[in-house]
Image (cartoon, rainbow, N blue to C red; front, side, top):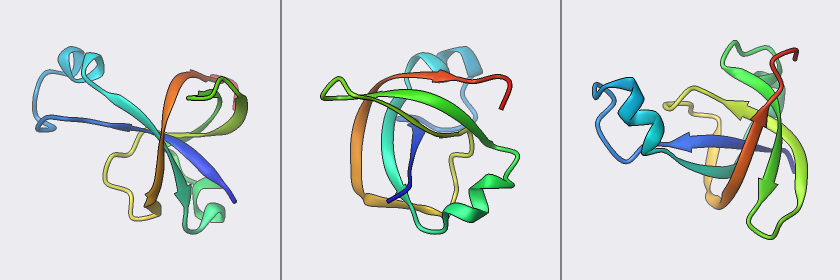
Length: 86
């Protein structure tokens, strides 16, 4: 199963960016079509720490309205370190 860490905002998207980043909640969701994300400009490789303390290499998605996410299996992510090179 391919999973991705995504930011979930709890406010309207037109609010100032600094406030938006402070109020985000990271979730790990399953991808419906993982191959689509490999070419997407919003996807980046990242090291993700799960709620149980495990660290995994996943995709980090900046797009908040992606149709390729399966929210039914969403779980919290504690920390994400985005790899700027990938």
